[in-house]
Image 1 (cartoon, rainbow, N blue to C red):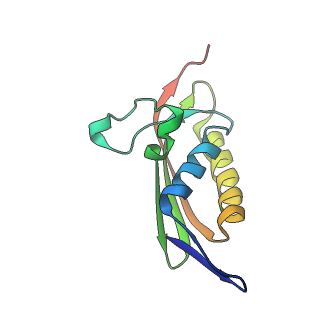
Image 2: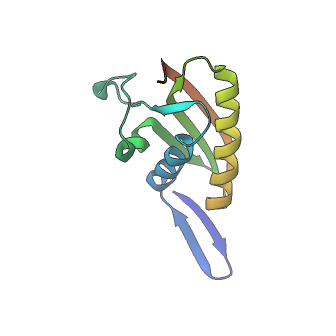
Length: 117
């Protein structure tokens, strides 16, 4: 759990909340079609519905630093590096602003490519 202490008291943000927030940010990023599960029994490469986005994100907090793993499906024809760079910059900024904690690392795992109509 992420925790920040200020003059008003303690603020604790659960990893599940951060994962849902990060997932919501991710699907709005350029080139991201959706998220895919991090759990083998759910099936890799299967596009998750909006209400299941946190299953495509894994958040770890150690020493008030956040590490986030994304399992994504990207749009065909867009460079994976460009998509990942945009995702990392956007999520890092918004998560740090939201939580008050530093994001130390964001890993992006491209699990599939989809052709958009």
